[in-house]
Image (cartoon, rainbow, N blue to C red; front, side):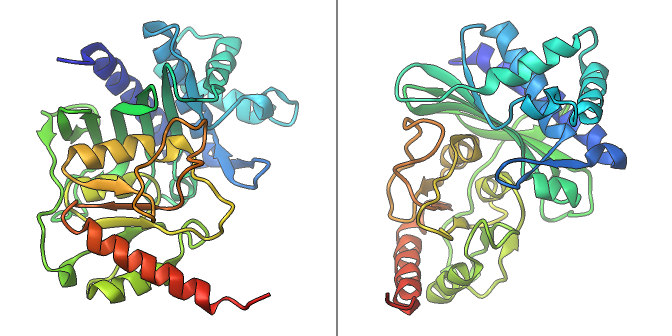
Length: 337
């Protein structure tokens, strides 16, 4: 089976990171967040998760670079000493024997710039940090990219229940996709892999649109107009992180919309590489709002794409048409200068 070793290493690494993240989340004082330059939060879990995964990848595939969200600059400062100590403590609980320098150096393996040639891993150690902080949905997302093509993806959705029929049941699902081999899910640390498939084609009136909790991440007003144009009658499913991709992949939702809130913003590779492969291997389709395939070969950001439309596949074309109309109407309402 193709990518057998990569699959095993990636699954084990993400599972380790998931255990650390949940330990941090359940220990309230350790959840406190630092602010990055863009004012987004970063927590002990972000740093610890990245350290564990980058260390695992370095041991197994020493030459593979990693493009990841965090670096250790804040932790190495005097102001970051308390956070650094908590990161070291949580990493040691999962991987004993690493020195402080080992942990910081592992975090800094995530500085790769990406590109169109060669092989690298894209990592979001805690995708949906605001969801993590509010005890909502969040994910650990890891993808292998070769010559600009996503080949393998692992999503750890730590607060996602086993299925929508039992939302109060046990939480925590692991999703795996290998290009050309389909998508699967299981519990975080155990259980048999089970195939996942997107929702079958249905009347758009019954479709469920999934979108971000934060209105700054995706235009809720435009998404509501898309739903109206499609004739969808069910309320949107709002959650943080790439768990939205997982929801589409296994049919909890029909589509995921991330509609642009400003024209100068480009999505990051690690925010969509893993989730997009999980959806496509489950039978769905993922493009930008103009219907273009996502381009993962332009560095650390999706510079040739705007917004995200992920669907069950069958409804993708009418959904794109509705998105186009909704965005044009919003543009026409803007005051002319």
